[in-house]
Length: 308
Ligand SMILES: C[S@@+](CC[C@H](N)C(=O)[O-])C[C@H]1O[C@@H](n2cnc3c(N)ncnc32)[C@H](O)[C@@H]1O
Image (tube, rainbow, N blue to C red; front, side):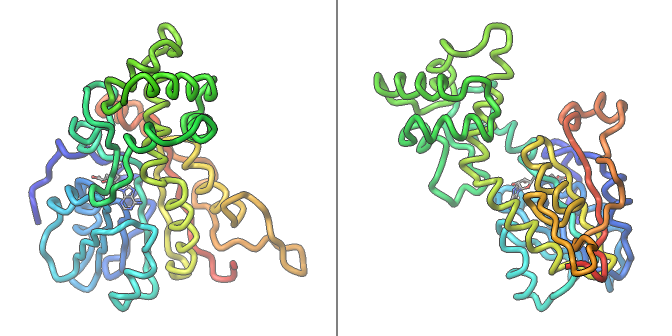
């Protein structure tokens, strides 16, 4: 196995995720967000040579953290294609799936990637650098309505339309190519003393749109019930309410939009049963140690036999 590169990403709620997966040593597990491999490495340690771990990441940088072993497979792909890849490996069902959503510390801290408001870099924000749709394209081409929509839905800004209008006004005066230029362009509408939060929300909106994060999350979640064996565990960690919502709906109500379906006898049809009714949060001690853990919410569910 490779070195444990703590600078790439410090795994959040590591023990809680392992407990949530209830690992059987001969089981098959999937970590759909490999990153620095912090969670994967510990899952792998709990497996026997008969067990198997398959880890996905769409960022080519993450592949460097993978290791060679007959029962470990790294899949350089978006987790939206979970079922296809498993099928290609001849796997129809697995014992547990872990998703630790969002971006890694490596992606945030590598200034060249353009995710951070702390540096002035090209407006990129692609998790998969093989794609050609980036934040610069959104900033240059989306009209006011489109910009306002992402600022409202993905950034949860208080004044999405005003922000969109300001952006379009600024880009008509000159091209906006870097994160610094974007912040300068929006400075007139940034609330005083809360500008840090405002820019973080703008960046979050762009990042979610660039990577189509909500669409791929939904595609992934829709496949989980088919892929998990009865009793298999789904463990999902999210970092903002937008991504937590479909996870919570699926686990509690059986559908991504929260609509309930009942059978002839009035029994709710749902593929999962929650292991924890309330999401698990990191301990104070963990937040002190790793401030990036502070917004994490962990949900755990079990595939039921007689669900949908
Ligand atoms: C929060 S980090 C995971 C960190 C990891 N658990 C660890 O301990 O190092 C999220 C990772 O998932 C990847 N990722 C995010 N969305 C993805 C998707 N739709 N498909 C594949 N990988 C994705 C990112 O590239 C990033 O490396």
